[in-house]
Image (cartoon, rainbow, N blue to C red; front, side):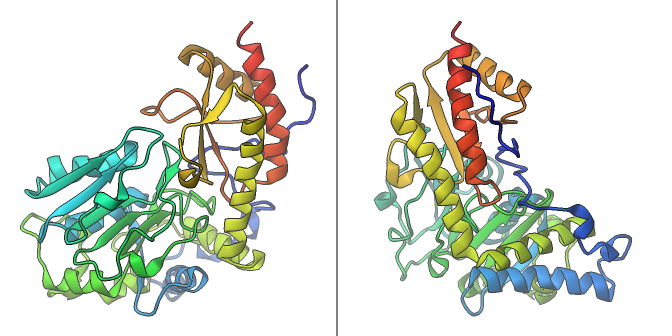
Length: 371
């Protein structure tokens, strides 16, 4: 029978993601609107976006944080264009966004010494085959496959190259070993449910040292330039953005950081996300017609949860549309390049009670499209 209880918030998109519980746009610091990002007020807000990020995440001493253009894509490409080329590169690919970074490295930058380590959707690459004398580029969490790296144990402390980590659907939801990561990028619209278009770039002291010692041979677009006179532009890491940001989005991000702080910090948001995953894991364990795309529980994402359903591709699309029409789950179809299935966001802005309400609807929709 058709369930009667619906999720209070049916927004389960994997980006932009659901706003935090209790969100009210009118409660933002709206005096930022209409003001220059170079005004004292604007600089203070952007500076706080950097310093509060470092504080709440517990970044090591010397790590720098910047707000940059182009969402997570802009942040990771800014890092690759600025840092790669001085030594070989190992790039890890197991879903569509990591495949995009392979394209950047091989076809756009055309680096000569590149080792592509690849796995299919649902699998993780052999982490023990990575050569850390090279620079290493990887995603922490494969947003379109639901496969994450289990931890940072595979990354040596005494590595020769840099580690460049696209962590857009992992930061604030997974335990990140900051000392093992030299470049970390993410975007506001994932775990914090913030707005799009802005990226966050975090550099370790090792990355800064490389940046100042190495100048790539290719032209550098203005929005990628982190140096001035051969030295790091320190202002960028104090909120002096390269181009004009949305001050409304900045206010929204500061609100999200305040929410995380009020919950008890990153440990609390990680716990929320893991509790959300458990709701789905319990459901999958009880139903043989649905399964995780991630083959190993150790690599199963607790944010972008990707599921396979025993239906044809057309039936899966009908199932997704039916749930949308009923107003119980919006935007949960698998990513366009991924195998047909469902993708349900389980980051910290999603409530476990809404996922619990959704699960019976999945059963109902599964049977409904078979008729």
